[in-house]
Image (cartoon, rainbow, N blue to C red; front, side):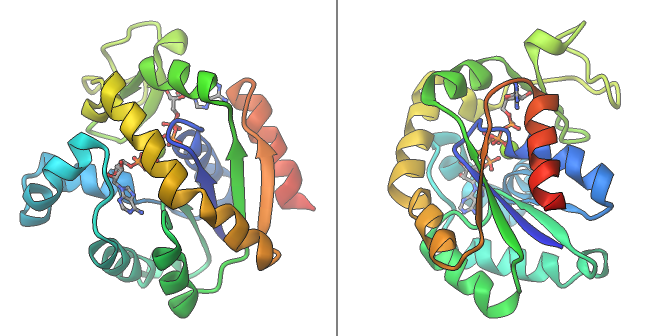
Length: 207
Ligand code: AP5
Ligand code: MG
């Protein structure tokens, strides 16, 4: 199954994709994780996109589309994948439709107040890309999965979160209508605990 996870920054795309990837045995393709890895390793791409990521803007469509196109052509995507954070613009969605068949786009519906609370407490593991919330960590500095050192993402500062939400509303929100018109949109209530949201997603996927 080829699944897209849609939703605002902090809506839980990465958290749900990580759980789904274990259950469905298909890979999570997170453009944000791919970009952060390049940033960490200071690759030419990483250096090119550093300022964009840190300010909350979007990496140019042509770069992002090419990366996803190459990634989805790898053998582990042959039986399906979960796209987390792509597409993020109509241009990206139209490009994706030209080279892939998408089964459904699951939109995680979360209010702004919840988003801000989630992002202000998020911790990220640069080693395994694990994403956590301080409220569920015994030690907020150590990754419970791989033992790596947890960090606060640079783009989780208040100013950058507001910019990411602004970019989401202007450029990414129109994708809801795009997938609705194509009969592929499934909206899921993204509020409540991690397990509750995950159950809702599994329920709609089983239908
Ligand atoms: P990206 O990494 O995709 O960031 P984002 O869309 O802003 O989304 P987030 O990762 O912030 O949130 P999420 O929905 O994954 O929520 P999470 O599961 O972490 O992109 C980063 C940057 O890369 C972009 O700003 C852009 O510059 C660039 N980029 C990426 N893709 C691009 C593209 N296609 N085109 C152009 N540029 C691109 O959850 C958040 C927190 O909430 C965590 O702490 C988590 O533990 C907690 N949480 C999650 N669910 C629940 C729940 N149900 N209950 C309680 N807590 C929860
Ligand atoms: Mg994410």
